[in-house]
Image (tube, helix red, strand yellow):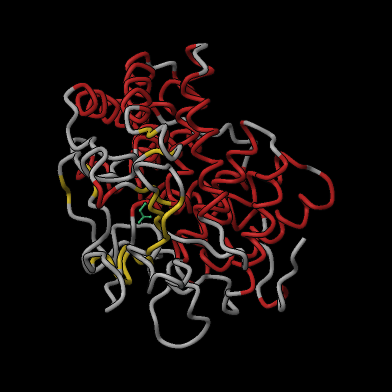
Length: 390
Ligand code: GLY
């Protein structure tokens, strides 16, 4: 297992601190209910405050996920009621295919509808999540063996997948278990294989997006969208890969998932600054570039997931490391005063525009919806024996 160069600079968070941080996060969720019971949160905050928007972004599932986590922490039926209102919105969205022409069905439907089914047996949640799984497999290309991320199916400029999609695969594993039909799982396995074959570079950093050849199905080239430049390693892409491998390993214990987890994690840890929260691209290890706090939360969840699966001494090491990362987030990044933000975690970065990438600049040094959700998931994982939404 990789050891940080200076792992003692931040001590592991204690159980008492976890409880206090989760209480504070749940209080923030409660404060947000009036504004966001019948609305979605924007993907990122604007001057640290999320505007209310329609349920049509790829990120809309994270806020309902926070509500479910708040329900689990408190047992308060107010949260359950609000989360089930969101489930209805998600059922409407998938039945009418509102802004679902992309691959992010897991991000949308796991923390909302799979959670609703698992926690309270919400039949509409199950139905919506299965429809979302059906939508997701429609984006699978047998030529190349991948799920197309964005855009019109088969379009030459979009014949590619992205590393983030590993987090959409649990929806497919869940759908196969739920229906007894292996077609979802089979596609997840092929997509994960294609991702490992192409997206992890020899130095264990990752390409953000990867083009495949529509005729031969062979690999063409990796390019970035949200990273600093093509050959750098976008911090969140590396974080998605780490957590994605842990989740893949939970469903299918293939040795390459475990090995890749170790290698991806080792690269990530080498690029961390002293407070264990990465800059938005791992090309930066010091200086004034913005951080991406959400990557730290995602990696902490990946470490805790893998620790639960593996057990033993190695698991203890990963848990301690996750506790240090979460301690840093709680002490230095979490919102302490609702007057400064309606989010949970400051200093996330959605998309930073550079001369070398293709994204639209937005959500730089802001709260980001998934950062808030995974922060709460990490705290929840540290506070109880949590049954995953993924
Ligand atoms: N999945 C898109 C992002 O992480 O920004």
